[in-house]
Image (cartoon, rainbow, N blue to C red; front, side, top):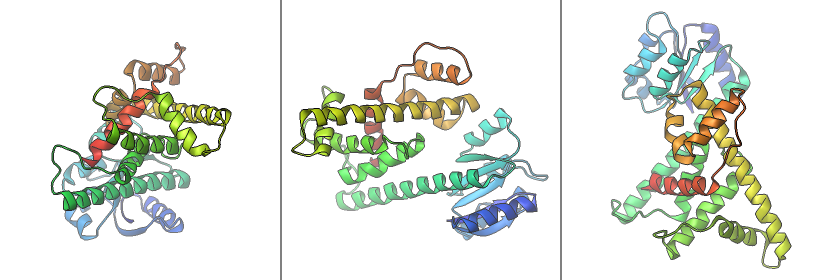
Length: 300
């Protein structure tokens, strides 16, 4: 990946360059000490993938700079020691991917850059799949010509967006997407989405093999259900945390009411603030159904 760093502190620029080079995250292709010194054409001419930019700078701050980068197609990571919610909210509303706080922490920088890189890889994968489908089928018609192969990158992208791509249940959820694709080919969901226990049973049976006993299948079903519930709860925690930091965060606004019952998200937010709340209900069926439908829509 190719990086451009904008910060009025030469030490910060040097630290970021050192981390990126030491960790083999990519190369620094340009630096600037103020937002007024860059524009979209400079970034495009250097084929910049990720712009790391300070929020507070003397002449033109990071927010104003991002507003002016209308044609820059890369990803933006904001850096600042300022943690005012209004500024953070505005930064996210302008389309930045992540917000790194000063003082610079190597682990945080590496983690954020790796997450952005994974997202870029998934987006490129989806883009190439769509191009291939358009080439083979022409422009998509009413029927969505997504494939079992192409729904997995879409699923991975959504799991990354929800902050659970590395969770223990993420593979189970991707296996469910493949299963639902095959199931829908034979029995369209016009009337009813398949029962979760039936989905779990089929996947557990496939995983344990043809000679597995009923006890072994049931044991795997229970383990799968627990992994998926933990993963869904982790996603709820992630979104609730985003909502507490910035209620206008685009991810929170987009995914919280889509994947969850918002009343339960609100209870989780109150719980994270230390308040006592009634038990929080998860709806795994809704989560899985939305995940599948959203993955299909990404391909379309």
